[in-house]
Length: 84
Image 1 (cartoon, one colour):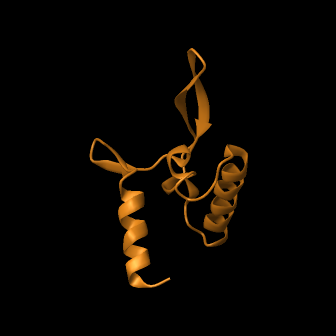
Image 2 (cartoon, one colour):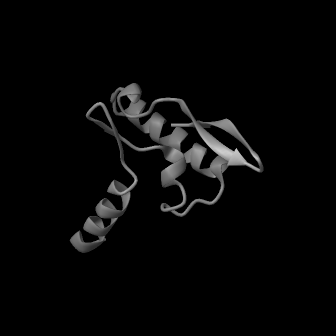
């Protein structure tokens, strides 16, 4: 991957950023499809492995991953689903 590819990905992923009270964050469910995943179950496993990697490298997991929920529309009703 060269620097042009990296910059393309940075711009793409930054377009999914949320900002709240000056804090920038991303939701896993927003990133899964741009990263090539179509099933939440598969992407949730990727997130779990990333959390383990943080622990292995003595990086505080809570500084990078927070369990949260996201409202999604399923049919005619909205419901809360797990997100990070």
